[in-house]
Length: 315
Image (cartoon, rainbow, N blue to C red; front, side, top):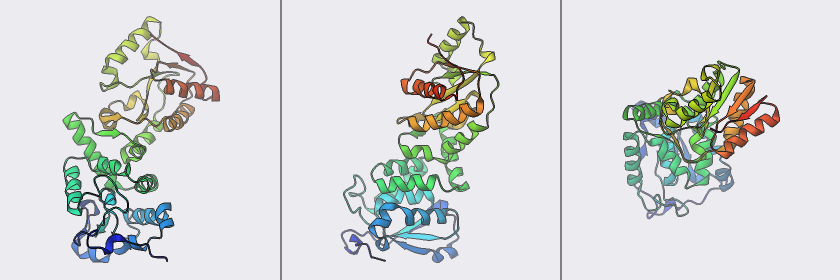
């Protein structure tokens, strides 16, 4: 293996020696010495960029197939390692300048992580970090979609539960990586389990007020539909939003009550909509959406034959 040049040998770039075991790791003190060192300096550049070896090691550690301690990695990895609950030690400064991390010591980043954890925002910090480094971003996506951890799901569930109790929006969908959260992937699966309560669906926009049916937008649309002879009792209500395809049975879910979309992934919503409407097999779908890309999703599905009849509806 070709050794990767590491600036960590310089006193100016290495912090004091710290062995960090995140709380999520849940390891007994006697077992901590058994970790296998996974050294940043041992990674060839092409292996690092491809994210094969590193993502595999993180995934194996999460799934308890092996147990690695990640040594000498640049400091932008600290929030991600902490979120996944894997051990790390002896971080170094980023190889290239990265805002915040290049100007912060290891101790500064650890304090930032601890503050995020205390405020139920550690996942948000990991996602924010991923925006600064494409390799970090790629790993977060790979591990999110290739591993399943009850500990991670429980941690994020506690973050969302805290947001609900405070009536705060804490599930921020602000990047591609946001959609890999355990709660979001779980909600996608739950939506596919819903079976239509009517042969006619009405596709509705999201709203600031939650649950959606309490919003002024929905009440206005309901009144307009009724004026045109369409009774809601004969329709299955479905919201299309950045979070996903949300049948009315999911409108009181914690994730739905606390999300806020900054960066909608239109292709993802097309994929989810195709899967949902294909299994739902509505005879008619009324389109009450107010965002052109989402209108186009329904038009595409109608053209593909996934939606049998599509009726645009404008109050």
